[in-house]
Length: 64
Image 1 (cartoon, rainbow, N blue to C red):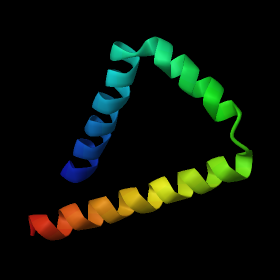
Image 2 (cartoon, helix red, strand yellow; image 1 turned 180 degrees about the horizontal axis):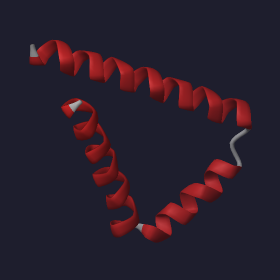
Image 3 (cartoon, rainbow, N blue to C red; image 1 turned 120 degrees about the horizontal axis):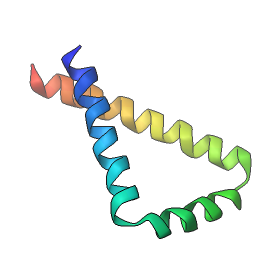
């Protein structure tokens, strides 16, 4: 349970940094994402999930 709370906290920190440090760039990023076809966005999301799962697995295996 501690790992889940840690992960959520890290996500919030990084997401918050984007809003705090570069809010105008975030608007540009949203506009750029709108230009990407939905299937490509889905693929990017699936790749991000896979990378996230791999990193969590690696962190867990290194921690034990």
